[in-house]
Image (cartoon, rainbow, N blue to C red; front, side, top):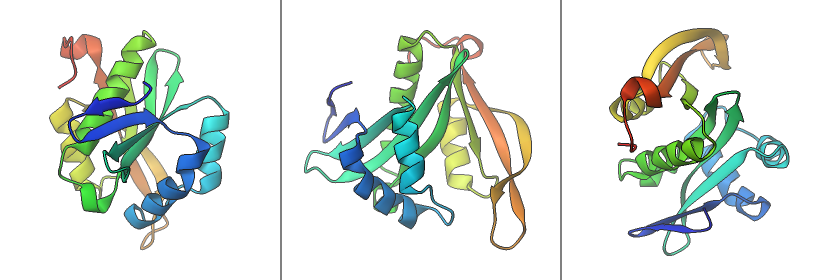
Length: 164
């Protein structure tokens, strides 16, 4: 994936030079954002980072993926609030599926806050199924912790050959 063009957007591997912009979006998009160190550690450990940019160079979104045993774990997927609702999240998920297939993995796994209704709708529309819950997984402002819904997209179960 060295600069895959998608109409007016393109995908490229996340590098250290992207991190100022990535962290800037992360801080605007999340109440409890990843730190620059989280992203640096992910890249240093060989996880896959993907950036989506508009052809003008503006960062629209990104994701961090970690291959684990037989599936790709989506550790972080974020679309800049100003770019949400225009298909960037869907395009990032499609790229995650492509990368998982290239690694000969069986599907994708992720956690999402139950309060993140927009993300849950995106994942369900894409074909993810809820498979469990992790108690007290996320920090939360008005309660001590928030659970995570664990969702999986299985290539075999879905019987799909191409991502939606």
